[in-house]
Image (cartoon, rainbow over all chains, first blue to last red; front, side, top):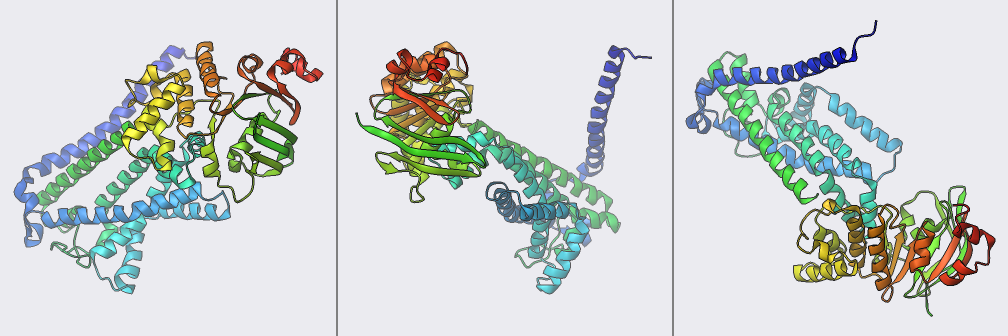
Length: 278
Length: 251
């Protein structure tokens, strides 16, 4: 028996709608729970004051600073490295066994669970290079961890820039590097920024790799060699050790809001570049 | 008459396929020379030797020589970037860079080191006027070049090429995707430009070549079959192949 196409059509449409609403619905429920439980905790004092009694009282100022330091420094390190690797892979090499090997390595690195990065960072940076639990060890570990994402998204974005644009640039007397700088990278910028945003999200939300390398000190990290904790780690410890669920949810609210804030800024930058280069 | 571009037994192959077979031709200064021939005749390849865009193809072998003003342009000592400032190119499909009209024209001069806005504005105005586009865009130089129509985009590409201050302009089927009115505007612009530039126009449109070129060359399967003044080629061609092509018997 053949089902009337109009019926299948409306069933499919209904199913797709349901799926979309379901996905968004889950997101809303998660955020709602976090906000209901955590928002009463959040005020200026919570954000700007130091934690007391392991975080049972007081605020989360050092964790906020630690998060910003860690995410910012890792991105600043990983972006040039990652985008540079992507440019090398797409523009300066032909497909060969060597590029396949690099690409395979990148794919494999992207699939490794973060706890393994944490272990590596602990053995190599913390112990072997004698950095101790420090912001530096955390930043280096996180940089290695987010590098594959940045390389892959940047490579994808650079590859999708039409060859004709490069040809036109060359015909207007641009060199290879001038073409990359003035035509290829601006056109690939939205894609590259997406990769950077995903990486910031990973950096801000990471716990396992950070506890192993940056430690979990509640003091304000004032130098690269200081230990510290991020909001995600703070949340984990407060909840895991039953110190204070209220403060844990309060931290989560600040965490969610900062990710939202980062996304808004990233979209703003993206729209600016798109407006300028279109 | 003074020869601007010359090739001597120029031979180009891609892998095993020879696409230009010992082509010898002299292109005169400050004229429009039309290159015609069915696809696969090697006319676009010849152009890509003159602007050295052939450098971006794989597996190319070049034999013979090509010269501009009597000096070879094929040696390793030639800087293709400098060469492309002397030899501008307009492609078949207009491809504006994804930025404003003004920035499209400023692209080449900026690479040469022209940075101050007044000079750039002078260049933009001059080149857009020469390309017969100024009146249509003078009030919106900062809008995206992608918003222009196809015909306007192609004239923008011509203006952008002129901004390099080239001696030679190569046009590779510049009107293949354009309507008759846009085509006429490009042809008018080219006719005005030829006093200051040596122009090579590749076209499948024999009528266009007959209308605006001073010399015509007919290529077939990588060989130069006939080359003479446009009058001669179109009224009394010496080769029957040329006559058949012009009359549309094959193509």
